[in-house]
Length: 368
Image 1 (tube, one colour):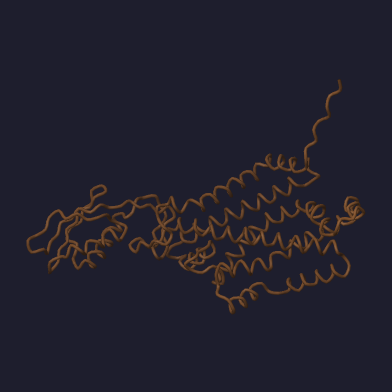
Image 2 (cartoon, rainbow, N blue to C red):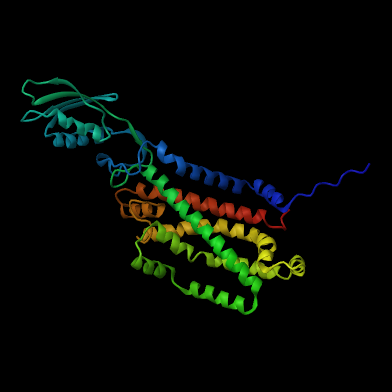
């Protein structure tokens, strides 16, 4: 009884096996998955809504110490006491509780104590003692324990929450613009390469003309007619980034159009659209996948550049480029405002590039 021949593995399975043996690519994939998961669910776990401001904790440096600490407690109490129309006569903290004595020249309205919990630094105040004339109040005030691992910005907003929310926008722009580049570039390049002749020459001259347009000038023209924002960034990047993809697919199509399996499909009477969909485009997916992986970091970096110039995402929306621009303006007084968002951006770009290199090696048919 003869043994059955070994089952031949498909090229896709071989590529996955080679990719799984690449430790660098697997580490990059794990980093990207962790970043994406953190951006999706992280803002709900930090305990700070990204739009929430803490006026008494502005430009707070990174750290794990609970806030407000001793350096920020008394200024916060003085500000709140001023709104209550009183003065802080005594303030002593024991654990999570504050013994607070307020004095004033006129009777203190207890309704003004609502300013304490509204600050988000303190809980509901409880009146322990009150002088008969009402000009002295003794209060027991719970003190909340707040943590800001990446510090706060110039408005007192948690930088970690804002960086994670900004990551959603940056990753969305990167993936959406790359998807547009894939759909437009693959279709355009495949049609141009398969048609050949004058059609190919005319279509490539259109690509050359679009290449000649300065990108920043193109964005400025769009800003003149439309409002700057997320939609404008997607339109501007998507309108330009498909050009490289079209050239890559055209080159692959030119090499495939005279292959035997394409000629056999033509002899069987298949239409040009069917040949492109069934035979040409699937055989270009290797280089296209690698190019798309390397396109995502370029798009994210381009969006960050536009937002840094003020031509991209606008408040109240934010992105890593917007946060980096804010950090650059406060570099001398609060360098952590630049370091935090820049670290997220650099980690994402490096991981995407490493993964792209791993995919290129895995999809190389000459690899072992």
